[in-house]
Each structure stands twice: as structure tokens, then as C-alpha cells.
Amino acid sequence: MDIGHTIKCAVTGMPTMLFGGQPGCRAGDERLARNQLELSHAGILSVGSPAFESGSAIPSTYSAGEGQNISPPLRWSDLPAQTHSIALIVEDPDAPTPKPFVHWLLYNIPPNVTAIPEGIPHEEIAIIIPGAMQGKNSSMKLGWTGMAPPKGDLPHHYHFQVFALSTGLSLEAEAGRSALLREMKDHIIGVGELIGTYQR
Image (cartoon, rainbow, N blue to C red; front, side, top):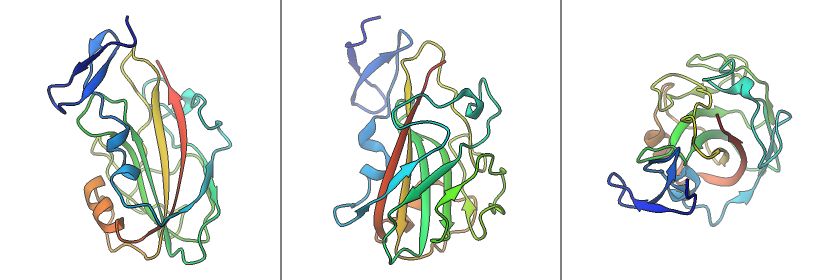
């Protein structure tokens, strides 16, 4: 396969690489949540995980196709003093979809929380994190849905985007990506990102 070859995607109208030897309408980094929001005045958060290093492969334990489909552990720091809540959006911009594939929406995380354990249950209210709520991923299910890129694709990149907000959100549980972005957009005071990869 010629990795450098691109075509114009019929869905997005944007140039896209070939994945798995077949034309794929790659959503693209420009459609990630962090690139859809005004972040010029946001501080920089540090985001990491004890399960994988930034830029490295995410263990298959957290995958849907080959693992246990449990959420990975995360941690963050450098929250602004004015933080009232935290939101997490995990997306795959390499998915052959018009928008990045949403793997996880977790919001109204209290500002005193700086780490979350692996295996958050697939429930509306994340009981392990008092007050936090989970939205619907692109599989239309609650909570985390693990990596399951098409076999033969180049490694997909999974963006764990953490947002510090100046307010709590009035969203109910089970919100979708669009509703979450709409509620967040005027309240972002900090942002950080951890990127992991996965290939089948």
C-alpha cells in the first residue's frame, strides 16, 4: 500500500489517506473537539496515564475488539484555580467517518478529582466519581467504548482531551458530543491532551 497516497473523500470533501488498502473518509484532526472550540485563553493542563505513555500504544486490555473493553486510568494536573468542573472527550480522528469517532464523554467531574481509575462502569452517573456523568459515545452507548479500528488500518490515534471549565454543566446524563461542546464552549479555562495509538 502506498501510505502517501490520498484521495478526496466523498463524505467530507477533504483529502484522506488510504487505510487498510481501501479508501477511508478519515475524519481528520481538524474536527477534533479541541479544534472546534475557542481555546486561545485556556491554560495548559498536564494529562497522562499509568497504563501508557504519550504517543505510545494503548494496551489491548482497553480495546473492544481484542480486550476487556474497560476504560483506561487517567490523571491530570495544573488545573486553574477557577476550575468548577472537568470534562473528558476521547476521540479517534482516523476513523472513516465524517466526524471523529467518540469513544468516551465524561463531564461534571469535580475539580478536586485529579485521577480516575480504570474500568469506570457503563452507567449514567459515574458513581466512582461523585457527581460525574457519562454521555453517549459513537456506538450510542454510555461510557467508554474501546478501540476497534478496522484490521489492516494504519495505527489510529486516540485523543484523550481534558477540559477545565469555569462552571458546572447543566447537561443531563446521556448527552451527545454536540450538546457537550455547545455547553462547554464559553467556559473553557484549561485544556490538555494525551494521545495513544492502537492497531489491529
